Length: 192
Length: 107
Image 1 (cartoon, rainbow over the protein chains, first blue to last red):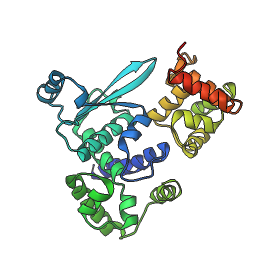
Image 2 (cartoon, rainbow over the protein chains, first blue to last red):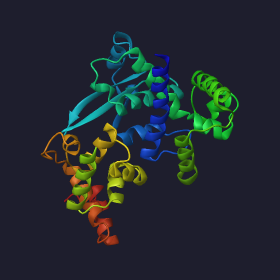
Image 3 (cartoon, rainbow over the protein chains, first blue to last red):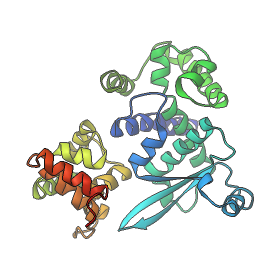
Image 4 (cartoon, each protein chain N blue to C red):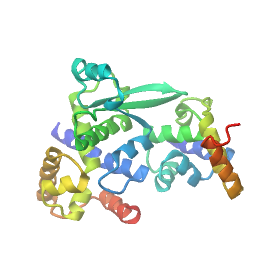
Protein backbone atom coordinates (compact mmCIF):
# COMPACT_ATOMS: atom_id res chain seq x y z
CA UNK A 1 0.00 0.00 0.00
CA UNK A 2 2.80 2.40 0.94
CA UNK A 3 4.69 1.43 -2.21
CA UNK A 4 1.56 2.03 -4.33
CA UNK A 5 1.07 5.40 -2.65
CA UNK A 6 4.68 6.36 -3.34
CA UNK A 7 4.24 5.42 -6.99
CA UNK A 8 1.21 7.70 -7.28
CA UNK A 9 3.17 10.61 -5.80
CA UNK A 10 6.18 9.95 -8.05
CA UNK A 11 3.77 10.00 -10.98
CA UNK A 12 2.58 13.46 -9.88
CA UNK A 13 6.15 14.82 -9.84
CA UNK A 14 6.62 13.60 -13.38
CA UNK A 15 3.19 14.76 -14.54
CA UNK A 16 3.97 18.28 -13.29
CA UNK A 17 7.14 18.46 -15.40
CA UNK A 18 5.35 16.94 -18.42
CA UNK A 19 2.62 19.59 -18.27
CA UNK A 20 5.22 22.37 -18.02
CA UNK A 21 7.18 20.93 -20.97
CA UNK A 22 4.09 20.35 -23.12
CA UNK A 23 2.99 23.96 -22.87
CA UNK A 24 6.45 25.52 -22.80
CA UNK A 25 6.54 26.92 -19.27
CA UNK A 26 10.14 26.93 -18.09
CA UNK A 27 10.35 30.08 -15.94
CA UNK A 28 9.75 30.41 -12.22
CA UNK A 29 7.79 31.81 -10.48
CA UNK A 30 5.40 29.95 -12.77
CA UNK A 31 2.76 32.00 -14.56
CA UNK A 32 0.12 29.49 -13.49
CA UNK A 33 -2.77 31.64 -14.75
CA UNK A 34 -1.39 31.61 -18.33
CA UNK A 35 -0.67 27.89 -18.09
CA UNK A 36 -4.25 27.14 -17.04
CA UNK A 37 -5.59 29.21 -19.94
CA UNK A 38 -3.30 27.44 -22.39
CA UNK A 39 -4.56 24.08 -21.12
CA UNK A 40 -8.06 25.30 -21.95
CA UNK A 41 -9.41 26.38 -18.57
CA UNK A 42 -11.48 29.51 -18.22
CA UNK A 43 -10.54 31.32 -15.01
CA UNK A 44 -13.26 33.21 -13.18
CA UNK A 45 -12.27 35.15 -10.05
CA UNK A 46 -14.78 35.39 -7.20
CA UNK A 47 -14.47 39.17 -7.52
CA UNK A 48 -16.34 38.90 -10.85
CA UNK A 49 -19.36 37.35 -9.10
CA UNK A 50 -22.21 39.20 -7.44
CA UNK A 51 -22.03 39.53 -3.67
CA UNK A 52 -24.94 37.10 -3.38
CA UNK A 53 -23.21 34.46 -5.53
CA UNK A 54 -20.00 34.90 -3.58
CA UNK A 55 -21.75 34.54 -0.21
CA UNK A 56 -23.58 31.43 -1.42
CA UNK A 57 -20.38 29.80 -2.61
CA UNK A 58 -18.38 30.75 0.43
CA UNK A 59 -20.86 30.02 3.19
CA UNK A 60 -23.47 27.61 1.84
CA UNK A 61 -21.24 25.44 -0.36
CA UNK A 62 -18.04 25.92 1.63
CA UNK A 63 -16.09 26.75 -1.55
CA UNK A 64 -13.56 28.91 0.24
CA UNK A 65 -10.67 28.50 -2.20
CA UNK A 66 -12.11 27.57 -5.58
CA UNK A 67 -13.55 24.83 -7.73
CA UNK A 68 -13.94 23.73 -11.35
CA UNK A 69 -17.03 22.80 -13.31
CA UNK A 70 -17.00 21.19 -16.73
CA UNK A 71 -19.57 21.64 -19.47
CA UNK A 72 -19.86 21.27 -23.22
CA UNK A 73 -19.34 24.19 -25.59
CA UNK A 74 -19.41 23.83 -29.39
CA UNK A 75 -18.99 20.09 -28.96
CA UNK A 76 -15.93 20.36 -26.71
CA UNK A 77 -15.67 19.95 -22.95
CA UNK A 78 -14.61 23.22 -21.36
CA UNK A 79 -13.58 23.85 -17.78
CA UNK A 80 -14.65 26.90 -15.79
CA UNK A 81 -12.39 27.36 -12.79
CA UNK A 82 -13.65 29.72 -10.11
CA UNK A 83 -11.04 30.91 -7.62
CA UNK A 84 -11.21 33.09 -4.56
CA UNK A 85 -9.32 36.33 -5.14
CA UNK A 86 -11.37 38.26 -2.60
CA UNK A 87 -10.00 37.17 0.75
CA UNK A 88 -7.22 34.76 -0.27
CA UNK A 89 -3.63 35.88 -0.81
CA UNK A 90 -2.07 35.60 -4.27
CA UNK A 91 0.24 32.63 -3.44
CA UNK A 92 -2.79 30.65 -2.29
CA UNK A 93 -4.74 31.64 -5.41
CA UNK A 94 -1.85 30.33 -7.48
CA UNK A 95 -1.96 27.10 -5.47
CA UNK A 96 -5.71 26.73 -6.09
CA UNK A 97 -5.26 27.11 -9.86
CA UNK A 98 -2.37 24.60 -9.86
CA UNK A 99 -4.52 22.17 -7.84
CA UNK A 100 -7.37 22.50 -10.34
CA UNK A 101 -4.96 21.94 -13.26
CA UNK A 102 -4.24 18.47 -11.85
CA UNK A 103 -7.94 17.61 -11.80
CA UNK A 104 -8.26 18.71 -15.43
CA UNK A 105 -5.19 16.97 -16.87
CA UNK A 106 -5.85 13.73 -14.96
CA UNK A 107 -9.49 13.54 -16.07
CA UNK A 108 -10.62 13.55 -12.45
CA UNK A 109 -13.92 15.05 -13.59
CA UNK A 110 -14.89 11.75 -15.18
CA UNK A 111 -14.97 10.18 -11.74
CA UNK A 112 -18.24 10.01 -9.85
CA UNK A 113 -16.71 11.82 -6.91
CA UNK A 114 -13.26 12.86 -5.80
CA UNK A 115 -11.74 11.01 -2.86
CA UNK A 116 -9.48 12.44 -0.18
CA UNK A 117 -6.60 10.74 -1.98
CA UNK A 118 -7.49 12.55 -5.24
CA UNK A 119 -7.41 15.85 -3.37
CA UNK A 120 -4.12 14.99 -1.65
CA UNK A 121 -2.57 14.09 -5.01
CA UNK A 122 -3.82 17.36 -6.51
CA UNK A 123 -2.21 19.24 -3.61
CA UNK A 124 1.05 17.40 -4.16
CA UNK A 125 0.88 18.08 -7.90
CA UNK A 126 0.28 21.78 -7.19
CA UNK A 127 3.43 21.97 -5.07
CA UNK A 128 5.39 20.02 -7.69
CA UNK A 129 4.39 22.29 -10.54
CA UNK A 130 4.85 25.55 -8.65
CA UNK A 131 8.14 24.55 -7.02
CA UNK A 132 9.67 21.55 -8.84
CA UNK A 133 12.20 19.61 -6.77
CA UNK A 134 14.49 19.51 -9.81
CA UNK A 135 14.79 23.32 -9.72
CA UNK A 136 15.17 23.35 -5.93
CA UNK A 137 18.05 20.88 -6.13
CA UNK A 138 19.72 22.48 -9.10
CA UNK A 139 19.66 25.93 -7.53
CA UNK A 140 20.63 24.64 -4.07
CA UNK A 141 17.83 26.52 -2.32
CA UNK A 142 18.39 26.21 1.40
CA UNK A 143 15.41 27.54 3.35
CA UNK A 144 11.61 27.84 3.10
CA UNK A 145 12.02 31.63 2.86
CA UNK A 146 14.13 31.18 -0.26
CA UNK A 147 11.40 28.99 -1.74
CA UNK A 148 8.79 31.69 -1.05
CA UNK A 149 10.93 34.26 -2.85
CA UNK A 150 11.86 32.03 -5.79
CA UNK A 151 8.49 30.39 -6.51
CA UNK A 152 5.96 32.89 -5.07
CA UNK A 153 4.32 30.23 -2.91
CA UNK A 154 2.97 30.54 0.63
CA UNK A 155 5.25 29.93 3.59
CA UNK A 156 3.13 26.92 4.50
CA UNK A 157 3.67 25.32 1.07
CA UNK A 158 7.34 26.30 1.17
CA UNK A 159 7.83 24.56 4.51
CA UNK A 160 6.22 21.41 3.12
CA UNK A 161 8.38 21.52 -0.04
CA UNK A 162 11.49 22.20 2.03
CA UNK A 163 10.84 19.17 4.27
CA UNK A 164 10.18 16.98 1.20
CA UNK A 165 13.38 18.16 -0.49
CA UNK A 166 15.41 17.50 2.66
CA UNK A 167 13.96 13.95 2.90
CA UNK A 168 14.83 13.36 -0.72
CA UNK A 169 18.38 14.64 -0.25
CA UNK A 170 18.94 12.25 2.68
CA UNK A 171 17.57 9.36 0.63
CA UNK A 172 19.29 9.99 -2.71
CA UNK A 173 22.07 12.50 -2.01
CA UNK A 174 22.31 16.30 -2.21
CA UNK A 175 22.44 16.64 -5.98
CA UNK A 176 20.74 13.52 -7.30
CA UNK A 177 18.35 14.08 -10.21
CA UNK A 178 16.20 11.62 -12.15
CA UNK A 179 16.70 11.49 -15.92
CA UNK A 180 13.36 13.14 -16.67
CA UNK A 181 14.27 15.94 -14.25
CA UNK A 182 17.61 16.46 -16.01
CA UNK A 183 15.78 16.64 -19.35
CA UNK A 184 13.41 19.25 -17.92
CA UNK A 185 16.29 21.33 -16.54
CA UNK A 186 17.97 21.23 -19.96
CA UNK A 187 14.81 22.78 -21.39
CA UNK A 188 14.77 25.49 -18.73
CA UNK A 189 18.31 26.39 -19.79
CA UNK A 190 17.37 26.38 -23.46
CA UNK A 191 13.97 28.05 -23.38
CA UNK A 192 13.65 29.55 -19.88
CA UNK B 1 -2.48 5.42 -29.47
CA UNK B 2 -1.46 4.71 -33.05
CA UNK B 3 -4.84 5.84 -34.27
CA UNK B 4 -4.35 9.27 -32.64
CA UNK B 5 -1.07 10.00 -34.42
CA UNK B 6 -2.32 8.59 -37.72
CA UNK B 7 -5.45 10.71 -37.68
CA UNK B 8 -3.60 13.86 -36.69
CA UNK B 9 -1.02 13.34 -39.43
CA UNK B 10 -3.74 12.72 -42.01
CA UNK B 11 -5.63 15.85 -40.95
CA UNK B 12 -2.42 17.87 -41.19
CA UNK B 13 -2.03 16.70 -44.78
CA UNK B 14 -5.66 17.37 -45.65
CA UNK B 15 -5.60 20.82 -44.13
CA UNK B 16 -2.11 21.56 -45.49
CA UNK B 17 -0.83 22.45 -42.05
CA UNK B 18 2.69 21.84 -40.76
CA UNK B 19 3.48 20.47 -37.29
CA UNK B 20 4.87 23.89 -36.39
CA UNK B 21 1.55 25.49 -37.32
CA UNK B 22 -0.36 22.89 -35.31
CA UNK B 23 1.94 23.59 -32.39
CA UNK B 24 1.13 27.27 -32.60
CA UNK B 25 -2.63 26.66 -32.99
CA UNK B 26 -2.87 24.11 -30.18
CA UNK B 27 -0.44 25.68 -27.70
CA UNK B 28 1.47 22.38 -27.41
CA UNK B 29 5.22 22.89 -27.88
CA UNK B 30 6.76 21.50 -31.06
CA UNK B 31 9.04 18.96 -29.28
CA UNK B 32 6.12 17.60 -27.23
CA UNK B 33 3.87 17.47 -30.28
CA UNK B 34 6.56 15.53 -32.10
CA UNK B 35 6.78 12.98 -29.25
CA UNK B 36 3.01 12.49 -29.23
CA UNK B 37 2.89 12.07 -33.01
CA UNK B 38 5.76 9.60 -32.97
CA UNK B 39 3.76 7.61 -30.43
CA UNK B 40 6.55 7.78 -27.82
CA UNK B 41 4.03 8.70 -25.13
CA UNK B 42 0.28 8.60 -24.77
CA UNK B 43 -1.36 11.99 -25.05
CA UNK B 44 -3.27 13.24 -22.02
CA UNK B 45 -6.86 14.36 -22.43
CA UNK B 46 -5.93 18.08 -22.39
CA UNK B 47 -3.45 17.49 -25.23
CA UNK B 48 -6.05 15.57 -27.27
CA UNK B 49 -8.60 18.34 -26.64
CA UNK B 50 -6.29 21.17 -27.64
CA UNK B 51 -5.18 19.37 -30.80
CA UNK B 52 -8.78 18.44 -31.67
CA UNK B 53 -9.87 22.07 -31.27
CA UNK B 54 -6.95 23.28 -33.35
CA UNK B 55 -7.90 20.87 -36.13
CA UNK B 56 -11.64 21.47 -35.80
CA UNK B 57 -12.52 17.84 -35.14
CA UNK B 58 -13.91 15.94 -32.17
CA UNK B 59 -11.74 14.41 -29.46
CA UNK B 60 -13.56 11.11 -29.98
CA UNK B 61 -12.51 11.10 -33.63
CA UNK B 62 -8.84 11.61 -32.80
CA UNK B 63 -9.00 8.84 -30.22
CA UNK B 64 -10.61 6.44 -32.70
CA UNK B 65 -13.86 6.26 -30.72
CA UNK B 66 -15.81 7.89 -33.52
CA UNK B 67 -15.45 7.47 -37.26
CA UNK B 68 -16.88 10.86 -38.12
CA UNK B 69 -14.97 14.02 -37.39
CA UNK B 70 -18.21 15.86 -36.72
CA UNK B 71 -17.20 18.95 -34.77
CA UNK B 72 -16.44 21.97 -36.88
CA UNK B 73 -15.31 24.96 -34.94
CA UNK B 74 -15.59 28.00 -37.21
CA UNK B 75 -13.17 30.00 -35.11
CA UNK B 76 -10.53 27.30 -35.40
CA UNK B 77 -11.16 26.95 -39.14
CA UNK B 78 -10.56 30.67 -39.51
CA UNK B 79 -7.34 30.48 -37.50
CA UNK B 80 -6.18 27.57 -39.68
CA UNK B 81 -6.97 29.55 -42.81
CA UNK B 82 -4.82 32.44 -41.60
CA UNK B 83 -2.02 30.10 -40.47
CA UNK B 84 -2.04 28.31 -43.83
CA UNK B 85 -1.89 31.47 -45.83
CA UNK B 86 0.36 33.61 -43.71
CA UNK B 87 3.26 33.24 -46.17
CA UNK B 88 1.29 34.67 -49.09
CA UNK B 89 -0.22 37.57 -47.15
CA UNK B 90 1.48 40.93 -47.72
CA UNK B 91 2.09 43.36 -44.88
CA UNK B 92 -0.82 45.38 -46.19
CA UNK B 93 -3.10 42.30 -46.12
CA UNK B 94 -2.07 41.60 -42.53
CA UNK B 95 -2.72 45.22 -41.53
CA UNK B 96 -6.18 45.01 -43.10
CA UNK B 97 -6.97 41.81 -41.21
CA UNK B 98 -5.85 43.40 -37.95
CA UNK B 99 -8.00 46.45 -38.68
CA UNK B 100 -10.97 44.14 -39.35
CA UNK B 101 -10.37 42.25 -36.13
CA UNK B 102 -10.28 45.40 -34.07
CA UNK B 103 -13.44 46.78 -35.65
CA UNK B 104 -11.93 49.70 -37.52
CA UNK B 105 -13.58 48.51 -40.72
CA UNK B 106 -16.92 47.32 -39.46
CA UNK B 107 -18.74 48.37 -42.61
